[in-house]
Image (cartoon, rainbow, N blue to C red):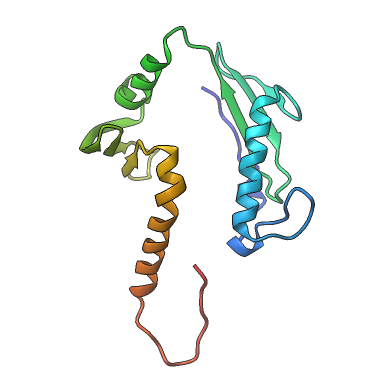
Length: 180
């Protein structure tokens, strides 16, 4: 079993607020949406470049474990793990989605709550945690197409943010505001 010590805990690193998420690839200050888009594009470029800036680390047998330091001001490493599986992609996808109990020893229970469409479902799972932490319970929506994320997801997020905002009473007194 591999053990690691997380240096960000010792460094008392705090996550940046959205408005402080950094600079674009040209070094210009940008809002968080542009910052995230730049990072997604950089990740896509890096996935095609085999080892530029990546350092090898010892991992489990038959895996390639690499990391790199990300220049975002946080001491957390970016990790990448690859392996080859002698099985067709459909079989691997089935194992990841439907047979998690075969590879996740912390999984206690899982089930599909409802299949919304052919490729969309609401999935519930429970994982064990190290003592004294309680079990973790998750409900996730999985299986959306890239087109759905491009056309719908942002609007659904906006609706949720509006609901969060609407859950607070309107105050006339002076006070601090939090941008969400």
